[in-house]
Every structure is written in C-alpha cells, then in structure tokens.
Amino acid sequence: MLASVATAHPLSISYSSFTIGEQEVSTFFRLPLDDLDLLFRLDQNLDNKISDAELQKADVPIQDYLLTHASITVNGIVLVGKLQKLGFWEDKGGYPYIEANVSYQSTSTIDKLNVSVNVLTDLYPDHRNLAEFILGDQREEHVFHRGTTWSGTREIGRSWTTARDFFVLGVEHIVTGYDHILFLLGLLLVASGLRSFVIIVTSFTVAHSITLALGVLGWVQPAAQAVEIMIALSIAYVGLENLLFKEVKYRWLLTFVFGLAHGFGFAGILQNMDLQREGLLLGLLTFNLGVEVGQLLIVALFWPVLLQLAKSSHREWIVRIVSAIILLFGVFWLVERTIWV
Image (tube, rainbow, N blue to C red; front, top):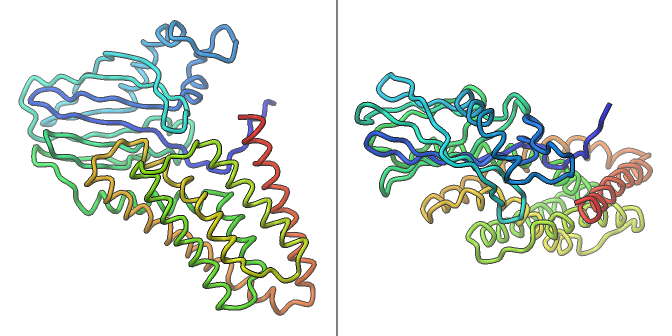
C-alpha cells in the first residue's frame, strides 16, 4: 500500500573492487544505503537516520548477504570471506552508500580465479555492479549483472570485454533514462525538417560529450542536485516552449546549453569508480559511444512516428498534448529534486 518517489533513472548501480594478492583477495563493496535499509531495516528507531551503531548491529546479516551474493573461486576452490570493516561512504554527489570490506583467504597461491557478484539483483533484476580488479599496477574493469562471471589469471589486463561492458552500460543508461528520452522527444517534436533534426541531435551530442568528459576527468564538478535540477528544468522548458511558440528559432542553441547539464548527469557513474587515467579514458570513450548509440536507437524509434505526424492534419493538437505531458513530467521532477531531495 506504500508508494515511493519515482526516479527518472531507474538503472540501479553499485560498486566493488578486488585487489588480488598472493593468497588473499581484499575487496570492498559499495551498496546504496537506501537499498540496504530496505533489505535489513537498518533504521531501527525510525528517525530517518542510520547511525553507526545501527549499522554495526547489522554486520552479521550484511556479511552473510555479501558472502551469499558474491563468490570467489580460486583454483577450483570456493573461498570463504570475512567482513573486516563496515562503514559509510558518499559518492561525489553526496549520495550515501554502505562500504563493506571483505577479505578472502586462499590456502594456495592464487593463479586463476572466477568471481561472480549478484548483489541487489533480488531487489532489482537489472542491477549493475561496476567492479575493478587490481593486481599490482594492472587493472581491469568489469560490469556484473545477474548470472555473469569474471575470470582471470595473474596476467590480468584490459581487454575488449571492458570496452564492451562500458558501451552496453552507456546504452542502458540512455534508454532507461526517462528524463533524457522526454527531453529528446520534446526537441524532435517541432523539428521543421531533416536539416533541423540533424542540427538539434548533433548539438545535444556535442554538448553532453564535452561535459561528460569534463565531469569524469574531474576538471569541473558541479553539485549533483544542481545538475539534476537543471535537467528537470530543461525538460519543463522544452515542453513549455513547444506550447507557447509555433515556430521555435535557434533551438539548436538551447539544445546545446541544456545538453551541457545532461552530460554532467551522465558523468556520475564513471566518477564513482575512481578509475586510474587509462581505465578512465577507456570507460569515458566507450560509455559515451554507448550513450550515442542509445540515443540513435531512440531517434530511430521516434523518426517514423514523427514523419507521419508531420503529414497529419491533427499535428498541432498532438504536439500540444505531448508537449503538455512533457511539461508536467518536467515540473514534477523539478519539484522532486528541489523540495523532496
């Protein structure tokens, strides 16, 4: 009977890191605080705050959960992990996580290992865990989802699978980002032709690519809530502009300005992984490519509909109705992100 606030970015994300030694794998898991509270009722006194004492009381069930949902097999033997430390962690946007450090001991030298991580997939079947494997100065990134396994040896290194993982993550992020989809739809509704259509999409692509790079590289880091407010404002404004003006000039410039905000919105995922420069550039390139492909998929889906709409005698009313819906969603997210956050 209880309802929760809807989010425009339903893709659920957590983080993990695995440091491989001679006979030990040291790990940390960073899981959203809200999700663990949902699983273990951490807020026992119901004051809407989780204290360190409340968190420590849940150390045994959290350890059991992690050992059940994350496994490491070395040379064919499943290792037994032990929780070493439990605490709080915040991402660069101030979003709270629980950080759990777990140590896995092996009785033999670690030559080959298989790792699977299925945390939070019982809550969100499409949950993604962004992982990094570290062996000396070698690093490799991997994106875990339900049923996937990472396999490696003492000669780990980045491969095409890392690029593939971040590419797929980029596609998923854009096609499940309802706010980005509505923003793009609002722009395309009033495109006057193919040339206008291409200019609008290109300006958005260039803008968010710039701020995605600036944000991920850490050169510019605006407050996460301010970015989300700007994204919501851009959606509401596009819907309102479509309602007020029959002919919108310089839409590409508006698209570029608000595309800058959308790029910062994409950047948070990669920032939270604290990747080294090589991995950061690879993740940035392939994630951004995935975002672009996802955007093209959305455009390809809408394009036939927009062509038919241009020929319809009811085009003006349809545009107004859809724009009003976009405006309402934009206002809702704007209120949600300014008052309820």
